[in-house]
Image (cartoon, rainbow, N blue to C red; front, top):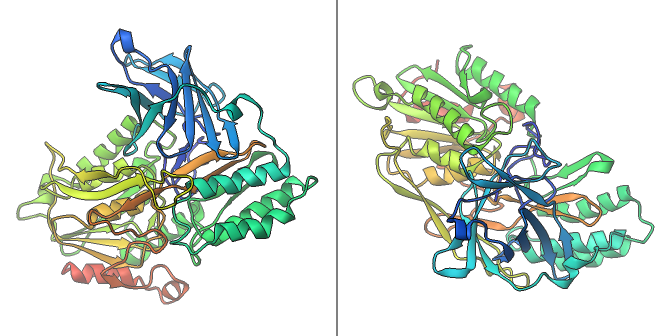
Length: 487
């Protein structure tokens, strides 16, 4: 499941805090809303006990209550239960009562002709999780998990060991990390000290989709690739002001979707489309259908019939995602669908599927870009601006555009290199953490985790030297490539 880059771990009001969408273990610690797709009355709810392929999760559905359990070889940590409710569309949903502002519906459907198998999908995110019916819960799920400092350390380390997908790519010996840091944890280790030990151990991963939150300590930790700026609202405001003054000659962007999307016309009939996230389009956490409708309204205004084709069409389009904090992959696909008149592959997704073998993944699921029907589609030259602050769903969007049939050029610097949804888990003491357990690769099987998507023309991106010289090399190169002139 998933929300990708932006958002608080607690899934409340939208903030530019975390790089990515949290993909919780069903409910995890955030209280995600869950929906069961309508079915015939005889098969209305897939009651029973189910284990997911990958994701280390067992869930029970019984008596209108869905209970998730996060499992490892060490034991079992219960997630937050959710309770059935009836939605206006007639479907049956489950929602965690202590998180009323969460809205993250999941559907669970039995597979036709396979009563012992089911599929779990999450609205707004891509792919499905296969579920297998099991007879009983693991015995560890029937008793409280130890919550002393050493037990917390062990669950944290073991969960990464069984689910994290990129130790090799990031050059981290996780077993050696345990040997180094486990002796530092004592029965009397304070919470603050334990927090420092866990985060120091995980820091060498340099994975912006890893995080640790301790609510009682009011502490939130995450770390990105070296040199990554602090991706908060202040940084976004600074970059937008710089672009409007320097690149657009003082002309403000026309904004849409609660400021997430901006558009301007450049000399020489070049369009400039800036997208800084793929979520939060209504200013708050909202159902995917609401977010998608808001995005479609913006695209209807920007990608018009006049700009898409004919004598007044764009000579080129710059898509600036140099500061894009991610969100929902499917919203990125909706943008890509306005930039082609031919279906094309986007990427392939799978999840780590064996706690003892980091090379085994679930069967790959391939995703495509389908041209949107009944709306103008631009197929001319596109220049995509990327950089280290292009993260998560911003990166899957760029990955999809690499396969675009029309002429597409990438300018700037490599993206951050964090493609997986943020897989959320709970520690026995109530802390919440996330990690990367999914692999996104190109249609030809090439992965970019850790290194990021490369560019065709490498330039500095919002560096101190660029600011000092009042220069935007990536923007200027894109304008020249599209045959335009700077304002």
